[in-house]
Image (cartoon, rainbow over all chains, first blue to last red; front, side, top):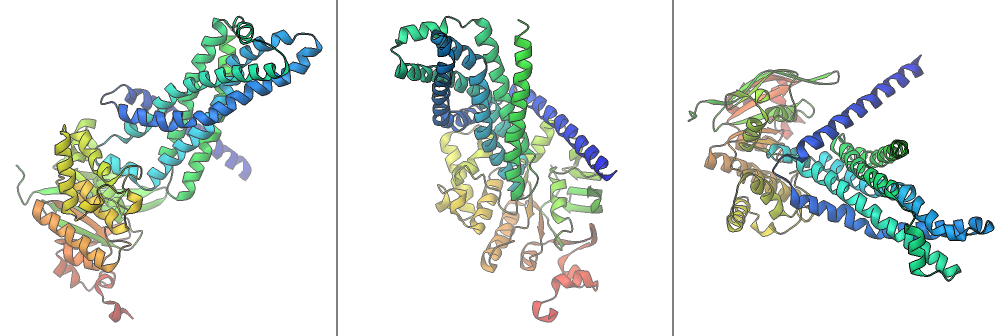
Length: 257
Length: 251
């Protein structure tokens, strides 16, 4: 009976968190379009969250394409279908692998950074200090970070996808004498509207998820330094989970068209 | 125009509980313009909760918080922000923004509330820091200054908006006696020079002696007495007496 009650209260808590997160998201849309806009802070967060992620995203993107091409080569080689590698690579990277892998990496890097920073600001009363000085901390702290993530994550994904295609070329070039024009034409000729646009649209949702979950966890952090670590950790876990769920929904929707 | 004797802060039957713990039970107090009221009480009795209710960081479960003649929880968003501009709050830790320099900390509220030129901004920041004797720390980061300096900078950041009310949450906690005394004298100086209505939450008796116009003693979420320092000090109540007893008398 006790375990049933504790499971019930845990479920209620999850539902409550989902409701709070939803309200927090609506608040973002309500505040994001009201002046005064914190443009300077959005640029600052774009630099911190997005530009500083470039090295990690670059290495991941390049290696992703390289390893995928190396893995595909022996399998497709058995059927004499090596010429399909560039197109297979580009479709899989642009449609699915690029957005999901890079988003999960961003969730780890940005989600934890946002959760920990806002969490420590909450614990050390810096957010309360902004509130009492009549500054809207939600607009300054949350709107700026979420907006930077919405704009930045899709750009990072496009950049990483391009590097993956380059990585695929490097892998193939090491084992064959394929030329760049041929590789590009094989890789991009197969790509259509349905491969690019839906996957690009879902990356905006991934960026929003990373920003809003990290901000929500940090902004609602309870007192004590332990809760800062928990905020960072749960920001990563929850945003990763939501990204995978959103991706599943996006795939279902895009398959209708 | 507010009269000198007008009550600026009025708490009526304020109650606040966290989960099942009732922290404030029926708190009543009137604080007049230019007066410094000190809330005295042991740790965990709800002193800081009173301050947070006055500034609207916490909403009481029951009762009213009237500031400048209005119930602050009945204000609309714009009125509430206007009220907050007139109310300063010095946090126990100073609550400086870690990612900004001291200068940026002071500029932060100014930029958002006033349309000042760069030179005016510079001048006001310098003047405010000079007032707390820390002009030399203007380009330092909060991590580079001591605890006492953080509180002084926090006070400068609060004063820069020229508040009419100042709330101090344990302003001398964690400081050495000399720095505590300096901070207490600074609180008094600010109150005298600007005629600011202040509420100081503390259990530092030297701070009480220097700053208090009136003392309210909190016990188990209720004021057991509110009165002039000389009257409160004469109280025969053992709980109240325990605050004023000298260390050598105690042991």
